[in-house]
Figure 1 (cartoon, rainbow, N blue to C red):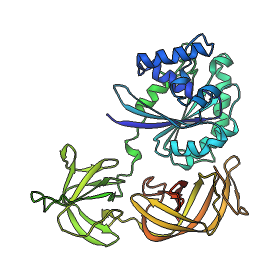
Figure 2: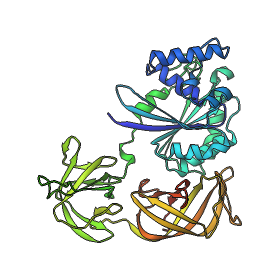
Figure 3: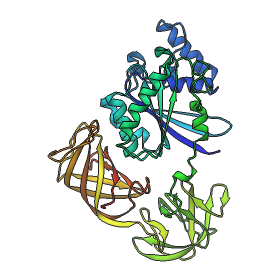
Length: 417
């Protein structure tokens, strides 16, 4: 079955964890012992009914404070599709957690409290979803039961969000009125909102088209591991394992290996279950070439006439994730791009972005925790890159502290690279 990764986002107390709990509960994706544990915990908290938010708020601090701090991942499936949910925190100080949780999502669900409307953090998370090029965005207007299921209030929030979304790059935008607490329009259509003619949230998640979101044109295969068994039986075997980052590969295709520039043809494509006739993103495969050429981890296999940009000077948007240090010009860091590692020097901070107003502060001299800005960097080894809007795998990277290997930043490559 097809897999959909989606992330929930929104302001504090908009009901993200409750929504996921309700979705899992009504989709019958909770084990009895899990529900019993949540029921017992809810009773100890003095609640009359199970607090379904506890299904995702797994940290003790989260349960005590009633907030989400870390990114909680949950897995479930329906007859039509498999899902991975990333429940991301709403507090501004945990913006970096939201970035990491949503970085691999196909769809983002931004919750808006029907009573409060569009808040600063709602705008922040919608902008980050746009910045991360998440193809599909669902605005779930929650707590409709607290505004008497008012169509006028729902329409007001829809119009307000549409005006804000005109400043963003959102390819697919949908609006659904829900009550996560009572289950209205979460799995089943609500009888309390007969004026709403759209699908429930689960039906939308099951039916949204994601197959065309992946780049099937630019063939990219970063080599992760060279398989060369040390045995007499397989002494001639040499395969290159990794995950397809874009395009389609087939046996017989002429390919080039970067950075050497040596060309060959694909002799076979193998998986755990045996040979396949084609490989495409995000399949993990082993590619065998017809020629015995030098290929190492960090190299990239691609088409001869469709190559990525080979660059040592890169231009990128960076989200700074460290509270121990700040990003400033002349900062030296380690960089990891696909399977390739190198060292990087920050040449310039062009501007810091105010993600509430979308204003560019060109006088900024540093990026602190949770801040986003545009930087130029010089890398010690050539990287094989595509613009992030074209390929989210070959267009992204992470920055690490050279001394501790701690991840301190995440970046998205721009067209100027």
